Length: 125
Image 1 (cartoon, rainbow, N blue to C red):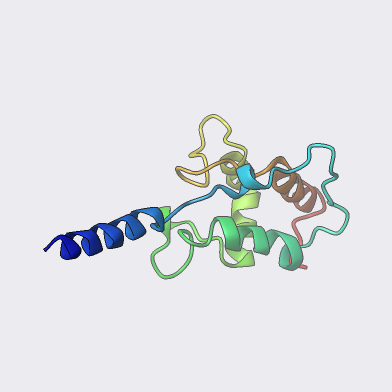
Image 2: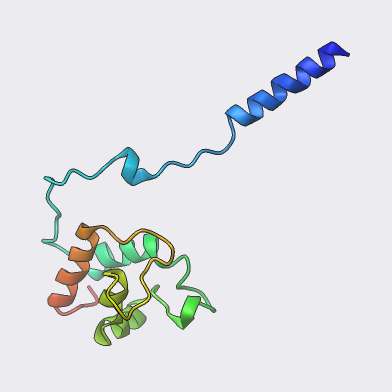
């Protein structure tokens, strides 16, 4: 009987010591504040859509996007640029629902990329 309890105890200890563990990438690999943010060749397809895919499209795509807002195509993103909502939500400005919802604000570098893209005409490039 004692062998049985010892075996169960070993299994439970193994489960508890190897269970899920969540790391925050920014804490593990902090961005060097002295590193430069490359905003020279910001394009929709090569920069902006990639950030949107990683940070926004999980909720804002498909047939029933959160809040009725889609970020998975240029046309809908451009409409958000034109009405000022895109920068308001990603910069967490007053009067806008901060995005990502319940998550950390985008990095200053990513926000700068959006600003450069918009300043350059928010082209579908």
